[in-house]
Every structure is written in structure tokens, then in C-alpha cells.
Length: 278
Length: 288
Image (tube, rainbow over all chains, first blue to last red; front, side, top):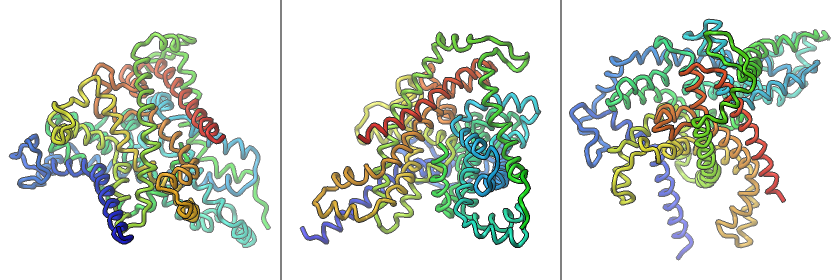
């Protein structure tokens, strides 16, 4: 067999493999989409199953709006995500700066104390955080959704790494120019770590958009449902209406998938950085 | 030159320490304290000593869910450690459109577990697509009740965890692969190494740090499984898919038996702690 033919066959086999695996990862989404697009007149349990709907319709998506307050969940998820991201970035960037650039008493104790919290799963702490939330009255509120999960060691660690990479002379020049610490942080250092901030923002967004367990615990008033809670509620309420459940599920994941397709790079970086989190 | 004030670093750290103090440091101590009490949120916690822990020993559902969590661990971790290596090697080829394949493999990772669970619940139905496909290719004769029969439920949920996690670990390996110098492969090729030999002698040893990382991450994740269980089976049928975290959730937030849940939480913490060390020493051992 000639060398070039061998190459073509190898390439063909690679593509075949790539497509087969893509079918496994994307196939379930296509089936969900197909179900959501099928009209009420079409049997969704028919044998053999049909991927392409007979007469595709968007009516199920509209029905989701009648069934539950999906817009409200959408806005809640968006607001909670944006607030969580902002809070996490500001607090982490503030804390990361002295940990990377200053000498002070108890620095190591504080740093390792912060890092050590990564070892303790939230699933354990939530018992106590729930008690705290009830006592302070932040259950069934945005504060309850946001504050307990906004700040973690991961963000501080990620931004500290970013600050460490900046050459010291930049800072020294600024001190000579008479900038105070806050000005150095805000005007000089923050703009230099923008890529890491973007990575942290995307990572935090992804976590926030799909967060389920804590909202499930802290929220009982549907006014504060986020999309995952709302979709879980929808699927319980209309447990036999799979067209509706499929449409609702898709509405809840379309934003993150679109954002992912545009900002893939940052998702991958976030995944890499998140891996350190453990 | 102005000297920095001594309290400046603490000012920068203050917001983070306040947040972490309230939502991380204090709860760690508080959960530990609660685990020695009887607490239902209505009356004040009353001290029980070791009673919660003793009760755990004789609680069959605790043992069942602990066992399920270990089955989860043993079933899910090897697949999530090994399969993504192959995926990473595959998507590391320089081919046209590879960017899109990588994205396609990563989409389950960015999708919320709630939607993933619902989607698979739909596929897993008795008269659902999965049974149809398996019957068509002749793998099974009769439909399998994936989520509603006690013998399959746990494994069906595990499969979903694997399906969602593959892309994540693939990306971790991919960045490991990309740091391996190409000339090592060239040298292996000159020596006449086959595809298998090449990867066995070059890829696997150099990927060791990533493999360790994936072992730790996936085993901790396996011990914390909750959402897929909640969405697909609620721990049933007959507790057959109840995991430790799901049981903690039930005891704490459905039965409001917070002291007992805290004791279980502490057990979970110990397990996760041990797993991390176990994984690290396992990898060290392989060195020699």
C-alpha cells in the first residue's frame, strides 16, 4: 500500500472515530431538541423513533412560559451570576494583591488557611451555613443565593498567581511616582491581570449558572428560583409532558452554550485553573 | 518614597476574610460541634457526646449509602482516569475542524447537571431511545428499566456522571499532552516504536502529574455526587441509588436532623481527606 493511501485511510478512520464520539456527546441534546420541537399531534414514543419532527413547532417553548415563570428564573439566574462574579472578582483581587506582593505578619498562616478551605466540601458546610442563613433571615432572598457561595479560595489563588507574574519594577516605579497601595492595585496591577480576571469571571459564571444544591436548600419561594431549580420544578410539575420539559431544559442551557462557543478559550483556561481547586 | 502603612495588607484582605470567616471557617468548626448534638433548628442544640456517631454504626441506610458511594467511586474513577487520555490523544491530532470536535466533547461539561439528568431520564425511559437503539443493534431483547429497577439504577446514574465528566478530564490531559516535547515522539518513532509503545513509554509517564490530578479530582467528585441522583432517582428505588451526600441532604433538610447529618458530613470529610492522601501515595509508589 502506498504511503499516501495509508495516510488517507488513517485520516478517514480518525474522522469516523471523532464523529462517533461527537454523536455520543451531542446526540442526547439533539434528541432533546427533537422532542421539544414535536407538535402535540405527534407521538413522541413512536416506534421507530423519529429524530426529525413531522411538523416542527415552537409551541412547546411558548407553553413553558405559560406553565412556569421561566423569564423570572432566567432573570434570577442572570442577576445571581452577575452579582456572584462581581463580588468574587473584587474580593479575590483585593485579597490576592497583598498575598502576592507584600510582606506582613501572619502572611503564611493566612494564605495556607485560605488554601486549606479547598479541602472541605461545601456539602458538609452547608448544614451550618443553612442554620446561619435561617438565623440571619437570608433564606428566600438574593443575599442567600449569592453571599454564601460567592467567595472561595480558588479565586484568590488564581489571581494571586496572576499578580506574581508581574515584574516588581512596574510597582516600584509607581511607588516613586507617589501612588498609594490602592492606586497601584487599581490603576496599574488590575489592568495587567485582565486575562486572569476574564478566566475567573467565566469560570464563576459557569458554576453559578448550573449551581443546584445550595439554591435548592436556601430557596423555597418560587420568586427566587434560578433556572436549574425552576427546571427541576417544571419537570416535577409536568412529569409526563416531555415536550414541555425538553423545551424548558433547552431554554435554560442555550445561553451558556452560546457563551461557551464564543469564549471557548476562557472556559478551557478556567477548567485548567479550576483543576487546581480540587 | 512613602513607607507603606503596616495595616495596608490587612485592609486588602479584610473583605475576603470576613466572607471566608462567615461561610467557611466558622461553618467548619460549627459542623464539627453540631455533630455532637441533637439539633432540629426549633430547640437549641443539646449535647449528645458520641451518640450520633454510634447511631451511624447501626443505621442500615447510612451503610447502604456509604456502600453506594464506594461503588460509585470504584466504578466511575477508573473510567474517568483512563478514557479521557484516549480522548485527549485523539483530539490532539492536527486535523481540520478539530476545534469543533473539542467543543462538542466539552458541551456536556458546561451544561447544568439538572438538564443533563433530565435529558438522560428521557433517554433511559422504558420506551425511550436508549432501549430502542440497544434493541435495534441486538444488544438486549427486552427493554431495561434503567432508573426504576433496583439492580440498575445506581449504575445508570453513574454512567451519566461519566458521560458529563469525560470532556473535563480530557481538557486537563490535553494541556498535559501539549507540554510533552514532540522530539520524544520522533525519537520513539525512529526506534521503531508502535503506536501503543509510543504512548506507553512516552505519553503515560509524562502525563503522570495530570493522571494524579484527575484521580484526585474524580474521586472527590464521586464522593460528592448529589444532583444527578436527586434529578433522576431521588435515591430510589429502595435506596438502591442513594449516595452519602444524598442521604446527608435528606437527613438535614427533609428531616431537619442537623446533628446527625453533621456527623455524617464529618465522616464524608474524613473519607475525602483519606482519598486525597491515598491517591498521592499510590502515585508515589508507582514511581519505583
